[in-house]
Length: 295
Image (cartoon, rainbow, N blue to C red; front, side, top):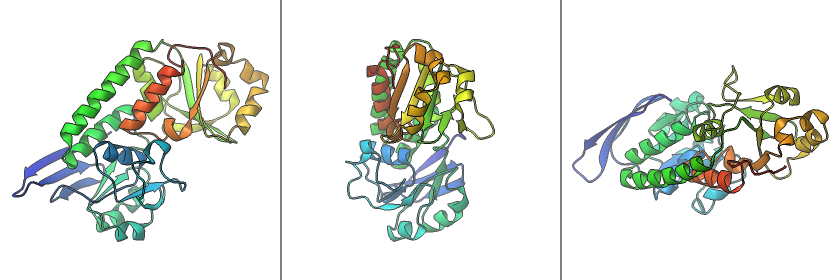
């Protein structure tokens, strides 16, 4: 992540003028933003944790993530994460747009004409990137005290999980009805688990932090622990794999260390609240202590 630089200039009023150097360039905010459009899940998570309700959000077409739904009740969608509707955003008259360096780089100039727009590396961002972005957003919205408390709370949850974690080799990925998308050690979940002390043999390739692999590729990795992020109703490929002798030969299957978790949280919950929930589930599920489990 390119480090975001924030300069605060005291204004005549209680608001602050802010200059932010980010992945899209330099953006000047004349006062603390109040009407914010959040085009990624981690921004929505961060703003709610800081006591700010965004005026508009992007999603995958079926509403907010479950753990954010209550806080985002009544907040209109401005379209898909990958293709937000510019007219919908304009109608909300935002004074700040939080966008993603990967998904929204092609429309950055158009977004910037609507309102000051800041780009972070969130979609392909690591665990550490998410923590840094949370702190930086807090500075922009003048909620640093709240952020400090939230990060201290997160550290307590993280430290408890790390104490439980026993070293193991793992592979994690998203499973759809037809494909398995492995996540690398630089991905959000992969880097989180690596920071806890687990190790994965999966590293970035030309496709970035997540890419499609076959069962044969998974056999080559042969992890001791397999973590599958999956939505209800998407089990067709998993059920097919479970009948395959190759899958049954995996160390993770033999050791009964195949764990399944909600894709909506584990793959998309890239925010401080999502992180805390993921760590709590990792702790209580037996994943970190190698409690035997099967999908």
